[in-house]
Structures are given as C-alpha cells and as structure tokens.
Image (tube, rainbow, N blue to C red; front, side, top):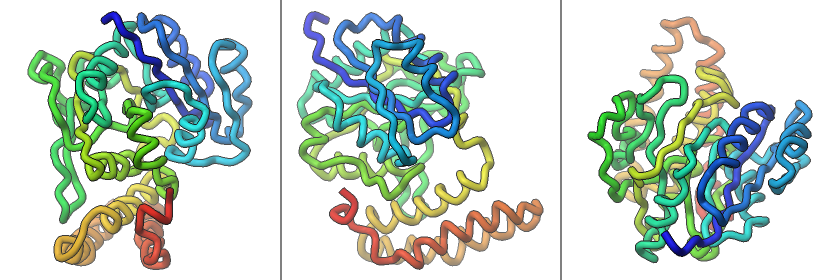
Length: 302
C-alpha cells in the first residue's frame, strides 16, 4: 500500500479509563502511518485524566453531558480531519496491521460507504463475534451475525458485502457523512449504527465485511450484561428502528408481531424467571414509543 489516506479513529469513554488506555496502547503499535485518535469522554463520573496523561498524542474531548454512542461519535466526527472516520469501541484491542485492509477496501470503490473488520471475542481466543451480518428480518427486526460463536478457522476469510456494519468497529467515509449527515442521536445506545447503515444504503452505497482486518472485543463492559439499562434501550430502540426503517404494510405486520408475539413472549419469560426489574425496563422501552409516536423521521434527528 503506497497511498495512506488520513484516518480519524473516534472512540467513546464512559467510566472506562483503564479499558480506554488498553485500547490506546494497542493503537500506538499499529503500522498505518497516517491517523489521528479522538477520545470523547461522555461526562464520566470517574476522573478520565489518566487517558490523556498517559497518551498525550491523542485529541481529547470532554463532553459536559452524556451524549450516548451516536452523540459522542458525532462530537468526534465534528473534530475529525480524516478522509475516513473509524468508530472504534473503547473495549477493543487491535493488532498492528488492522487498519490497512479497511482503508484499502474503502479506497477500492467510491460507492463503498462503510466497512467493518472481523471481530473476535477478546476473552475467548479464536471465537468469532462478527464476520458480516445476515439481512434484518423486517417483521421481527432481527438479523444474526455471521460466524457468531464459531471458531476463526478460515471459514470466514472471504470479504463480502454485508447488510450492515458492526458498531464496535465501523469505518465510514467523510464523503458519506457529509452527504447523509450525522448519526441519529435519539437512540443514545444500541441500534444507532443499524439505522445509520440503512441511511448509507438508501443513499446508494454498499457496506462491506473486510475479512483481512480483525479486532478483539471485550464486549459490553460499559453497560454490563443483562442490565436494566441495556434491556430498556434495546427494547426502545428496536421499536424505534422499526418505525423509522420499515414501511407500509410490512410495518403494519411487524407491529402486529410485536404486539401479539414479542411483547407477550418477553413478558412471560421475565415473569417465569422472576426478573421484575427487567420486565419494568422492557415495558418502559415499549411505552416510550407510545408516548413519542410522532418522533420517527430521519429529518427530525439530524
């Protein structure tokens, strides 16, 4: 690779200074010569100063309020100077040559709007989290990650177009951002990159899984697994995504599925497990959409 377009790596920190420093330690070792790193601190309650004290070479932005994943990345995008922007979760670590294949993929075709690398679970050596995504089912709003839970044994080494990129590591071009606007920050957590990928595709661009690049993901260290916060936003934003991206009779049928299958099923599961706190978070997410039924269009959120 002889041409090295500039890349702005944007990552969000929220009460995870040590994890963010581990990510930055790995980024210091990469072989790509033309990049900047922008860390956006989303109003952490813990002191994040260790991040820029140990890594004075980064750009550090401290927000006075928690803007969520989309809002934090948007803030970083506004300060970015690169031809390409890479959203990279702070709970990841990267090998030294991960960036070159992503840039090469983006450079290979001006109609590629976004790309993600192979993602491997950090604490389970060789176990895949992501090798592309299956298309989203418009009725259930579900779409499985290709390769999830399988060993990285060579079966997923073929780069290919995919239905959407992965928010843990998603490269987009400045050209696309300038054309379609920033991410919809109303989501706050979860589904925002899926929504963004739909807008990228609607603008005529493709999205790629780049198998020659890989990262290691520690997964959900900021919000925790099985938390009420995660349940609330996953429920709320699954329905919000549905309202914004599914149209006509398909939307009507998908809402029927939600009302008569998904909600009863989740209610029964939480009750049988005695997880009343999760049930409350689930219904809070559903009710948000009922009380904010007029908020659904892209135009109102950019």
